Image (cartoon, rainbow, N blue to C red; front, side, top):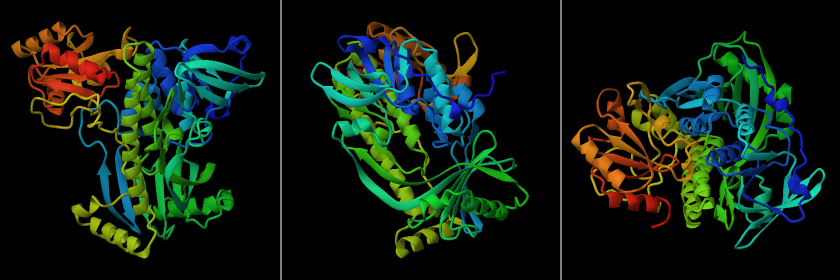
Length: 554
């Protein structure tokens, strides 16, 4: 049994590197700035695609306090490819049910994953320091990642041929050259400031208290959200369970709250006590761990690409915490960027492919900001008319399903469907369902060739494959003559593909249903598992053209 690690107290050693002694700056393919969840995930993905990475962090610790805790199904599927999702799911608290309350009454509940046939849960709740710790331990297993703690980037210059990074280290400053630099250094990004860029958007004039509360209670693992509860009148409250019998409680405080005073235990304890008393847990004892008072903004940079520097995660965009869109969208940034960087560095795709990272993830950021802003406006109405509308909607939602679609306690994170991406090939055949070009591939049970059962997403092109940077997967559905003709077309295309056969009957029936597939149907998936083309009967020319388009060669 693995010993328990206190990830919040870990300190990583600074180590001198030979690059610091070089007469001229040493050249590296990719430098990643920031060893938070996004930078760690990006470095792992690149290394698994055989791209050496220098990962720089200005500190030598992981995060303190729970911070981001809700990790969505799609993010877990990304972590599966990075080799660490099992640990996270085992440690975290899986959940899918949310309940919404108005004053004393539950107005309705929702199920984020009502259908069966998915390997991963809708969400897990797991403190950010565990996620960072597991990612950092995965980094340590990969020799192509050079993680340098206490290396702070203090300068960035670039021209047509290189980026030049100036680094402050305990033994003095030094410089590195890079083909590309990924800025994953958080909401207060120094990289953004050094390039003279800013994030633009809306700042919300409200304050919220986050508290980690340790208590042993039999409360179910559900998301509970209260509007205007008697124990915290006029405001909102959110309750989640985390690992280690830790509970996250968010209290809306109002703009006039004193952030220093509200962090004090004598202010937090009565609030938590009142919440527990209101749900009948009068005898539950608890202790306060980490606490923070925050405000937030919904904003983003105009452009995520600036020459050889690409921004990802909070350095590029920020949202309110309602909906768990921050960390999840950041990991999906890394997922989008890694295969494209690898393909460009390996001269398997033109530099223009990186422009599609910016356009696709700018679109996703806009979607997240739109949903986050709407949730915040509903949760924190700023006028009497807005509050009257919100309260009327909540009252109606007790009895009328139509009103529940208007209730917004945070539309929870889902991956973006990149339907307008220039990398997609438009359908020439009729299809139904959600698996349109640009959509992230849906999971489903399958039967392998040897008769064993498994999961569809596990069968897609593995990152460890030699050509993983540009490894596209072709899903071929069904058996018989139609499926065989499709396989022949794939073979004659001379495109290197990882082919997965999916039966349309038995255990494969659900996959066929989700992909609206019949025998002979083929789906072409990008290395990040987004659909880029699909056909009922592909031709070799179709396949070649679709792959070239997905690599920005068209």
